[in-house]
Each structure stands twice: as structure tokens, then as C-alpha cells.
Length: 537
Image (cartoon, rainbow, N blue to C red; front, side, top):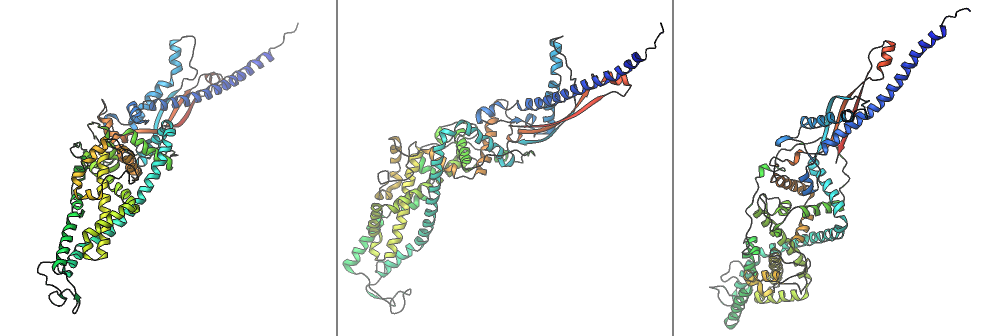
């Protein structure tokens, strides 16, 4: 038998090397694809882990998600965020390997990935955009918690605010006209007295040229004598006694708080302005986030959020920051007393506009004012003075009723937005002794009234305050209130990170790829991948 050489065996032996190289290369390609997915997962888990450290107090008290991006009160920094991210990524990159160590024989780590380099890209802060991202979260919170219950009330408040703005505009215009008219009112009274011969030293009937240089030569002026003069003097004296304008003018110069609080005490809390978020140099992020909220209803919901999260004077709240926090959000003064004084003046002006609107349309009130005008200045015989006095009394009466209204509000009562004759409190004759009559408002408030209470009127004022101011001032208070909590003395609202981008360079060492490199004698195989990602609340 002739022996054959093993040509085919050698051929298949050589060919098997290629098959093995291809097989292990394909297997390595599959493993690398899985490793890249593991890299992406580890990167995402790292970001999510960073943002899982949201401030729980901020969430519970204000419904806001944010991570503190600065250590021990230092400004937010990429280095601090990178240290957090790096720690979580390192912890997540070998999760499978750790489990394999705890459960030997059951699991293995086929990926063997490692993070070579990480970078924090851009980040967004709660306070960016003038507090717009804070606004977005607050509105989203309200949509999920109070949308259904608040909708009808918010629409009504918005409508009321529009009516008040219109009434205030009309009232301001009329007030300016009356003030201009009253500048010459006293001169008109004195002129009437001279013409009627009621001034001391006046002669009887005569001509303008005989003793009065203000009259044109030859003008004949009939003056009162005897009983007529006495009747005019009595009429003038009687009118002076019933004239409420001097009393009202005296009250206008007094402290509003003194008049509407009575014996009530005012908080002495005040802020250090230089430490406020709205006044200092602030951190800024560079990450741009979507801002889907911002319509009319969203604005109303944000204002309702402020009413839900900040206390006011009627709450009898005691804080180491400010006791009247909603008043600060509206007025922006640095002490409780200043804010309450501003609120009282604002409420007073608001009520003046609405009360004036009622008076000008009330026939009975206008009849009373006309009768008083004839009593006080009718003796002059000058219709111009009578009309000027009527309009001045109209404003004075609206002011007196408004003082009464605000005092009722500050003592826990309610006041209708629109008055009627049944809900009107101050009779015209009581204007002359209004300061004493104001004490009656305390009993009226205690006896129970209908309409809007103090907080309801604050809701109207909040809706009349520009949004940028509301955002800045409420962020001031969030920061200061958070600092009163244990361990939060260095809290900064402009350190609150709500979004961040990152990139991680990963190394994937060869596993199955070592076989073809060994068989074919090529260089060692290794893989790299870069994962970019981002997260935002």
C-alpha cells in the first residue's frame, strides 16, 4: 500500500486558524457592542446618581428639585460636580464584577470597562434666566397639585385685578383734577368773603375802586349789610363746623399703620440687604433648558404658588427671617414694618378706587354730598366753588370708607370688592370725626362680615405685581428660610443645580480579541468610546 502525504490535513489546519480568528473577532465585536452599551448605562447611572442627591428640604418645603453644586457655601463649580460624577461612575462601572465576587461562579464580567477621563460640560441653575427655571418648576408643581381646585378662583382673581386697575386709573385721573381745583378753592372762598363784605375791615356797599385794588375800575360789587351780613357769617360758621375736608387732610398726613392697626403691634424683623440673593453677585449656568410654561394661566398658578408657600401678617407667623413674608414678596422692603406700611397704603389706594367708583354712581350719596356742599359753601353764591367742594368731598368720603375697610381687613374681617349701600360703613356726617369712628371697625370685623379677607386682597396685589420682581424676592426668602434649617447655614439658592451635561472617555480592553492577535501575530487590540449625556429635572 502506497502512503499518502497529509496535504488536506495541513490545509485545514491552516484554514482553522483563519476560522478561529474570524470567530473570535466576531465574538469580540459583539462583546464590544455590549460594552459600549454598558458604558452608556454607567454614564447615565452616574448622572442620575448625582441628581438623586436633590435637597430633600427644598423639595418638601417648596416642591423644587435641585442639587447643591457648591461645598460648604462655596460657589458652584465644575470641579465639585466632577468629583461627585466621577465617584458614581467609578462605582457603577464595575457593578457586574462586584456581583461576580459576591456570587462566584454565577456571574462574570464580560465587559471589563473603565472610565479613562470625565468632563462636566454645561450646567443649569435654579436661578438662571432671572429665576425662570424656578418659575417653571413652581408652575409644574402647581399643575400637579392644585390645578383643578385653583382654576376657577384664579380666573376670578384675574378678572377682579383687571377691574381694579381700571378703577384705579380712573380714580387717579379724577384725583389729580380735584387737587388742581382745590388749589384755588381757598382763594375763591376769600374772594367771596371780600365781595360779600364779610372780611374784617370791609366797608358796606360800594364800588371796587373804593378800597380794593384787585377789582377792575368801575366794577360795582354789592356787599351784605346788617341782618344779611350776619346770616352770611352764621352760614359760613355753620359750614365750617360741618366741613370734613380739614379732618380728612389731617388724617392723610398721619401714619396709615397707626390708623388701621390701632393697638396692634408690628414685627421688628428686618433683612440685611447686602446678603440677599437679589442684591449680590450671582452664579450663572450656561445650559439652556426648555421653558414650556409662561402663559396667562401659568402666571396665575405661579402667583398662587407664592400664596401657598409664604406666610403673611394674618398668619401670626414667627420667623427669624421675616414674619410678613408674602408682604415682602409684593413690596420688596427690608423690614416687616416697611412692608406692612406699604401694603396698607396699597390696600388703601385700591379701596379708594373701588369706593369712589361706587360713590359716583350712587344717587343717594350724591344727594347727600350736594346738600353738604350747599351747607358749607352755598353761602358764597358761586356754583364753581360748590362743584369743586362736591368733588373734594367725594374723594374724602372714599378715603374715609377705605380707611375703615383696611382697618377691618387688618382685624380679621372681610370687605366686599364692590360696595353697595348696605355694605357702606361710614356715614357722611361721620367724616368730621373719622378718627374716633375708625374704632368701630374693630367691632365690625369681630362681628363677622362678607366679602374678601386680607389674604384675598394680597392675592389681588400679587397679581398686580410684575413677575420678575416676584421671582427675585421669593428666591430671596427661599434662601433665607433654608438657612434656618439644621446644617443649611451656608445654603445658596444660586448653587442649586437642576441640569448638567457630561462626557466620559471609556476604555474597553480586548478579551476574545486576544486570540486572533495571538494567532495572527498582530498588535494588541483595544477599544475606546466616548459617551456624552445630560440630565435635567
